[in-house]
Image 1: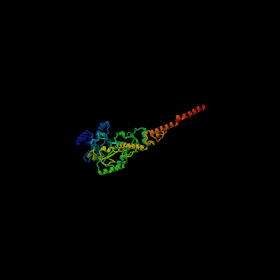
Image 2 (image 1 turned 180 degrees about the horizontal axis):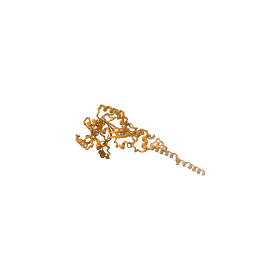
Image 3 (image 1 turned 30 degrees about the vertical axis):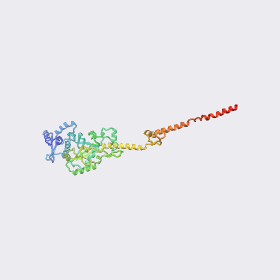
Image 4 (image 1 turned 60 degrees about the vertical axis):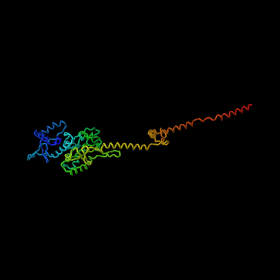
Length: 403
């Protein structure tokens, strides 16, 4: 409570004084004391009513009342069975808030997520910290009281919940979602159920899930993460892009659940804003936003696809240029217009000789027309001297005969 409500204070005196004051007014009570002397405070029935009147009009859900239970023999107050777990959840929220990740009213515990079969998967902690680049993150706090495969089942249920269609979807979308099991993958996230409860994540994929391990050893954490990473690969792993482009190394995170792991001890020692988060499928630890980002995802795909498209255009242009016809008369390549004239179905007959360029074909037609005109012209008359000689001889012959 101290770290969550007053992270700037170096000591918890102010928080303790406020709790003692609320205790005097019968608003809170101490339910139990942990082994490390941490006290677990809970609301009384009166405090619970006051909290509901104060918070619920603001849209803030109040947890269920933890009733006082006493031993039937000794009459001793019995502590709740989830005190250690509840303390770890609160401590996780406090460490996030202390690092500036999320407002104190931006945390919610035991948030239900109902599946299609009616099963309700409750998130231990839901963080909303849009100012820190984390619009939403679902968190599971594990004190190694659950088997590693139980965590895989939790991950599967979050993945299934993220694939549910919103109840107000139009009939066409609903029919598409029911057409085959993977049809939901072709429906935009804006039409899915999770977008009715949470804001867009600002990244590809479903709402991220973080597993925070507390009060355990590094060996147990490593073993659990190994099982979670291998057995849960279908739910967190990205896919190859379905594209005909060559050289695409980017990955498609659109249907995956980003899964992060860390420990409460790391958050306490280094701070939640430090490089203490590991993303499944990656090696090493990163800051929270770096672990959530997908540098090899959609942004890289757009760059690679644009480059591949440009290279494909160049290749197609080179191949087309290599096929460009050459004029058999002058040896020049056809222009695009002439090429189109000689290859367009139904119009090639108008282009004349398909092996000539436009200019050579025009010259050819001009030469042929000149030859035709020359051949059709009448023959030129013979020399005048040759034609006048015979009539002269005739006249002289007639004159001598008369004499």
